[in-house]
Image (cartoon, rainbow, N blue to C red; front, side, top):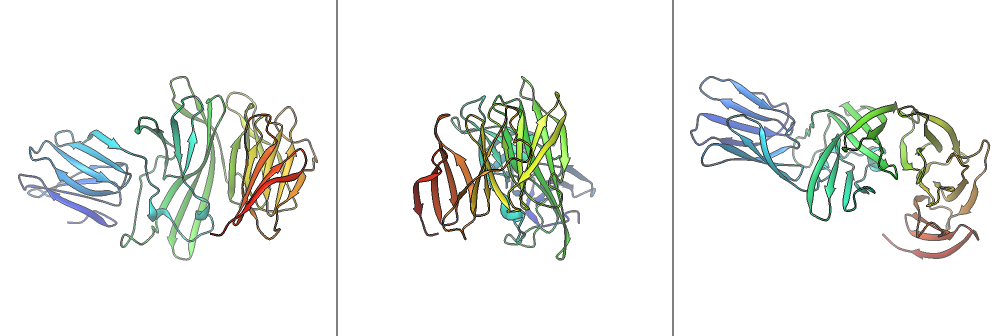
Length: 359
């Protein structure tokens, strides 16, 4: 018997012994009728099937899945009827040695409309909504409707197939828009890799339903998108790239998002962006310097605007993350590099506090 294209991780006979259940990397449960050779399939279970446990009564099967969930499948309907879920882990088989994959991180994005709810970013195909207070899974927001495939020779070998991962996401302050960046990576061989980025603008209605209203493929051309942030008051999104460009995306009507301006600082790679609490400044990590851009009433920079430059010390350390801190009136911005942390006062242009550390 043969069907699985990749590793089979679990096998189990039903109590009668006439049916064999198999599951593995494809996240597909296969039922084999041994007497006839016929097969039934339950696709897109949600994660790699690590183990299968038929119930003694024969009415259902329990699947332990790689997305930190246990799902119960009815033997009669051959469908998932119940599940117990935790926070989804990043699947290690999606990691690779490419520079783009190093950008992928798991983040907990707070939902400002629902205190205690976080959006888990950095997962294949979906964003998970999770209630941190109740320790309860709420929903999966499907960004790319593809079957999850975890192909590996053994449990330490990364996938060589096609993967799609939600790499970045941000919410509007009023919770009406969710913007995501997903990366589709196809690696047909060791020497060839095709990568496509898609920036998706999702509207959220009053019932919490998501709808893609606009999208842009490879928003920074051949460069990698490194940061994605929403303006705290306006429908304006800023993105940055590995080649130094910073783009402002604006909402022209209910569904027309477009790139209204592109800026940058001397071609330095921009690794992180952050709007100030009042929306008057945009901080960007441009190599070893912190660039502060003054924004107009539309939430973007003026044409040919020059930033205010704060030099990180030492200058051979590139800034990896920037963040404004405190209340709306706070003038402090944090700049983090590989071995140091500086807290800048943007009014005086001086370092308010700093620390050095060793990895």
